[in-house]
Length: 455
Image (cartoon, rainbow, N blue to C red; front, side, top):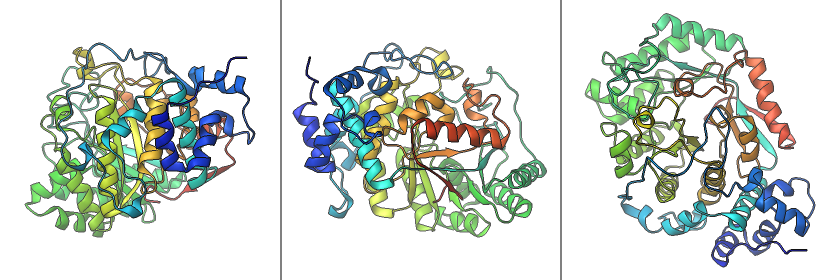
């Protein structure tokens, strides 16, 4: 009987330093999908698991859900060379109490792994998840409200915006009146939601007062609901439009009822990538500054990475290290949410300048490596079931993830890009059942219902 391949010495050494020698050895021998049964895997099982596309999709262009499309991993969207500066280009500057210090090359090595190396990385991430989070899988009953798709910015990846980069795409421009935002908030509360998540384009008529008015409308409609709202780009725009500092504007938002901020608009925190994707958007340093200011104001945020377009594993590694360094300073990030690029209606893809999203191998690895690299600073790694689909989301729960996001109720941005996973799942109870099915497919024992995204 052929013996299972072992992970490379370099990967084994990194995993030992994260988990400890005994745990890393177990991870190298028992892939995550087999650990769930609580028994040791045989050599034959290990070999099958390491070769299986369901655990370690290890071929270029690994197939994914049809709603995402298959990615070749080649062709348009050649990644620009990284131009990141600071600690992320060398080693993480996290303090000694923040876990292992990582170099950019080490993180890139894990993100590029294949075969036995990938199986060991995924198993190690699953073991670390079990040690930190147990078998609890959390989600929040919430509603997304995207109040406008009109935007003055020219992000080349965005199929939702009706702005200068997407005039010819499907759909019509819209702007929800405050009364409709109130109605949707009240309806969400009545249907059991504990949170509303509000984001939109940068409408040319919006000022900081607009965002304060939106908060007032939500609070009046459902005083007990948690408001998770406004991307760092919206916060920067609001402060600038009022001629006040970020700190002052964030203080006003918090006083008006803002509970936490989504860490969107990050895309990839690399100047070269942003120059291609979103040249007129806030810079990587501005994004980090807004998020740090939010934390200083007592507002928690999530964090995100949109990947699989014109980027590379080195860009992802730099992004993770920048988030890690920020969290070491502020402690305000509640979770990390990798967001696979949905290409179908994206302007940059339609122009032939980006690839068709990440492969399954890349998706699994990014979630797994995030668990390892962000430990112990960011302990919640979220799988976006809306973007990944149920089967892939279940796999991610065996690759370091412990959170399933929210019930959404309405989702406009991913649909605009061409994803179909939300179709037919509008009733909140149906979505909750859908999430529970994903979780139990992965054999987890406990579902934890969060009250809001800041937990």
